[in-house]
Length: 176
Image (spheres, rainbow, N blue to C red):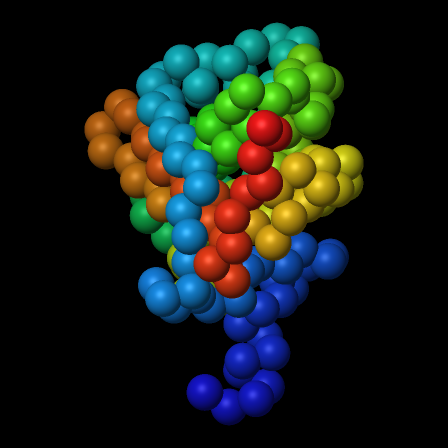
């Protein structure tokens, strides 16, 4: 891969979002797993409720990407936002599974879901991009780890699976 393409492959065009470098299976150690299933009509209703702030759970880049994917696929924006919402929830569950036996590092009711972004690379492959206090808390609680995510939707449902891995084969420190 040419150097300029390799550099672009680790940056997202908007802001400072970055995604993890490519990993080889020899250098990964899975430490957490999360999954989430979203009923798309229920999410659509939540997004369209008068006075709702649910849409603020998505960064503007996520909303734009969902609109773009909707135009490409013919599915409505909510289908694509549902997959991203499932990705955010799967990330929270995977991160929580790493911290079993330890107190939460972020107060659950204070999590700004817009700081957990499900973005796509230039080829449409999803990745987790963390910003703000969530990025800081994740890096401090699971040093050397990154999150991998897979999204899908079919009919009225969207699903995501997220795995927390150490790219260097490291391990999460135990509390004992």
